Image (tube, rainbow, N blue to C red):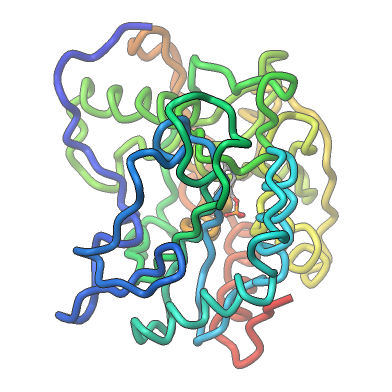
Length: 337
Ligand code: PMP
């Protein structure tokens, strides 16, 4: 894999929370027990979240003033904390963690937006020992989020198969939503660098996401999204043993959207070859929601080796699922369970 010397200037269409505000008033951010204006929100440089990526986080959507799947996000946060030997409950109750989010939403007047909830190991020594960090850090940012342009959802996205595989489960389980995202970031850089090398300028043609394979060459997920494909009327997605984050949106597709539309859904391992023969492919995530993949590029060392068209734009089943998704999140009954 070659390193790019120049700085890529291609950004994704999704603005990270905290970069854009709709009001002129400064965003208020919860940092370690206090609500502070963004310009004054800071953590210790001795925080192990910063020093070692030692911590866990959640990305959560707010629809119609409700925290979408709040309970599931809280459960995943506390389970992930437990998996890194951090007993979060001992320091912050689940109720308090929900209240922090509601306070942030209210302080920033958010009805539709995005919450980034970060739990770090906390400030400690320069050494690795996490047990020398007495108190975990908690940061909560509630802000607006700029989605992909609406046209992107209809035209579908072009993606790249990353050469870099996912970190194997036995090294660092991707089910843990940890602050260690370098594996994903470097995979995403493959798409960004390739987009730049190909001189792609049209927003709808940008390579905005990667398909990551595990070290057994099975399809795993995107850098920040789960993956699904549709073949002959059945919806497929890899099991969590493929080495993926068990996405909340993925679960919503499996447990709510597919049953609501009567679509059979199967969780099983599959290869890239099988994915490329699909009728439809789509990605899911709290930020992206559901977005179709129209084309998949393969590359070796930033040289394109194959281009596969999946569908002309968003396929009919993906469209029906996304329509159902939008219907629920724009209703008066946004699920917080
Ligand atoms: N996989 C990865 C690696 C992610 O970062 C995300 C986004 N959090 C997802 C999948 C989708 O998860 P969710 O639907 O919970 O946002």
